[in-house]
Structure formats: C-alpha cells, structure tokens
Length: 465
View 1 (cartoon, rainbow, N blue to C red):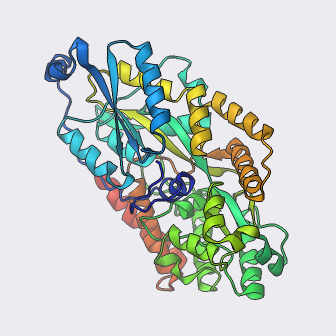
View 2 (cartoon, helix red, strand yellow):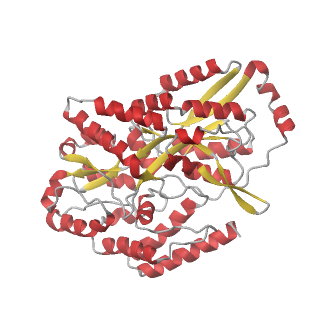
View 3 (cartoon, rainbow, N blue to C red):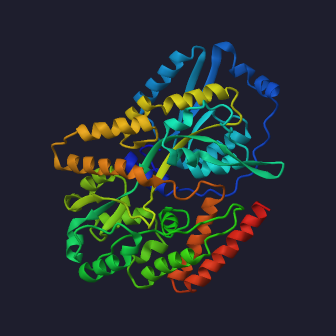
C-alpha cells in the first residue's frame, strides 16, 4: 500500500501501512465461490484476441503506489520485459479502499489481473473460494529460501476442498513489510517514574496505573472497534491464546483466553484505557499521542516524520523502543503479498514477474525509497548494512534512523501472529464485540468469552461442516 489509506486521506506510506496493514482495515466477510475456470483450451481461446504473439500481456495491480513510485515500478517492468521479449506488463494502480470491490467484480467478470497486490486476509479469503492460483507446482525449488521464513509461511493458506478435504497451498509471494515499534513520550514516562516503557504485556497494568495517577494521561490506546486494527487480537496470541483449532472451531475459551479477556476488561473498567477504545479506531490513538495525552503509541518508524510535522513539541520528547511482546517474545509483522489469479492465461510469466519484482536487488531499492522493510533475505541484509553506514546529521533524521534500525532488528523475532485464514476478520468482529460488552460491564469477561465461542462456532459449523 502507498501514500493513501482507506478513507482517501493522503498520508505517508509508513503511517498508511500501520493504519491499513497492521489494522487490516476493511470488512472482509465470506466471499461467494468464484466461478469455475474453464478448461485450458477454452481459457486460451477466450483470451486469444489479447494474447496473440504480438500482444502477450500480463496485468499487474498495486495499491496506492502511484505517482510516488512510478519511476521505480516502470524501471522494474522495463527490466523484466527486456528479459522476456514478446511479453508486456500493464500496470494498474488502485486506491486501497476500492481494491476488494474492484477485484471481486473483475473475478466474476473473468477479467481478473494476472498479478495483484493483496493483504494476507483478503488473499486467504479469495484463495479459499478458488480465485487464486496455487503456486506450489510452478515455484522454483529454491524460491522459498530467498524470503524470510516467518513471512513466506503466511502465504500458505486453505484452498477449495478436494474431495471434501481441506487443501493447503502456497498462494502468495511476500513483498514488503512493516513492523510495529513503540514510540514513547519520554517526558510522560519520566513523570510516571519510568525511564523506558514496558517491554511485555504483563508489565502494562502497573505502568498504566502509574501514568494515569502521576500524569493524568493514559499509557496506551488499543482499539476494540471490530473493523479496525488487529492489534488487540494479536496481543491475545502474544499472551498465549490459540485462536482456532484445525477444524476452524474456537480454541480461545481457554485459561489463556480467560486471562486475556480479563486483562483488557479490567484495564478499561479501572479507567486505565481511554473511553474511546470501544468506539474509535487507531486514528484516535494517533490524535491522542500527538496532543500529548498518550504516553506511547505502536507505530512504524516513518510515523516519526508525521509527528515532527504535526506535533513538533511531542516529537522533541519522542523516542523509539521495542514493541510490546508476550512470554514468547514474538512481535507482529504486517505483510503485503503478490498473488496470481487462477484466471491468468500466462501463469508462468505472471509468477516470473512476481518473483522478479520481489528479488533481492529490486526489493532493496523499493524498501529504501518507500521506507518499508523487505521480505527478501538478501534485500534485508542490504538495507540493514545501508542503515548501519548512515550517519544523519539532523536530530529528526537521527531519530528516524534509530527507529528504522530498531524495526530491522525487530524482524528477527517477528511473525504474522494472526494466521491469515478465511474468516479471520469475522473472528475479530466476534471477539471484539463480546470484549466490548465485558469492558462496559454488561457481562463478566468469562461470560463474554463464552458467548464469543458460541457465536464463532455457530458460524464455523455452517461454513466448515
């Protein structure tokens, strides 16, 4: 995703990724089955006018990368076309908020792009309905080893059942990444008696109480709005909660799940979270941090530039720290992937282009331009080495540089905490809605968890008998 977010407001790429990727913004309900693909001969015949030897073309969709990255992508496309005479790439850039609607319309009209930039949850939903090509038979044997294992595995998801049995395949190639780090207001930390923010969720209650008691502000803001950020769901996984079992049934009504529900509902009932966490999304966290009313915010390194522009006094006392983790030490990584449509008439060429775009040199150039992180091992090593050599002279540059280095280091223990399986956004809605009831004192946290289990299993039984 580029410099726009779902509501169309222009922001920097790093902040946009945090808002839309880490939050997985956008409703992703159950998709209808994709119309079955025709036979190979019929498929080829249907595309004959567009796929003559003189005009063999693959269509490539991205999200909010134009016009800022026109030069980069046009150069990569030209390089790939030079290696594949007779095949051209038609690049189409779409606003983030319209991609799901336009892609579904294209799939059902049988005009789907050959290569498309997707987030993991929508890719998993589309793959489960037969809309994406399983890449396993086409992938070169060494391909998987070129990417970070933690993000490559996130591209493996469930496809249409074969003879009634769920099938797992690799459906996506990882492209660019973001990790959340903690940006903290050192002035508020000092007033609360801390020299740094907590590193684990277990330390948060005492810290939140100290911040509120000694400063009158809040320590952190984690939204429980169902269609917004997935940070709270990820925190549950960090706290040891297993969300679903192998049959898609609820596994979260467990001792760890009860502790996690009690953790969040208790914080809210004690007045240690802003009241708006049940009604407003991640943007409210940004507003509160910039106004000096929040001690810390989970975000990307590039958000520091936005703080400097919007709230220079807060920026002057802001410093980056490692993200909050659970006992296992894992933090979350947000991934943007490339997928191949099952309707593609040129699947080998489409996959070749996706692998070329995500190779080490191309990813390193894009990561440095967009200030994101690469999924390629070679690119990550190059980006890390480049950052180590940099010596910014201005204070803002040094702060952003420090945060970017921390983000690279965070990748060493980062993973996709919430598996991108079909229905996960529905799961988030169920859990958040019931947790809201517990936070507002309408039911106990145990009763809320049990109701979330009942609602999810009712949905899962109908979807996965």
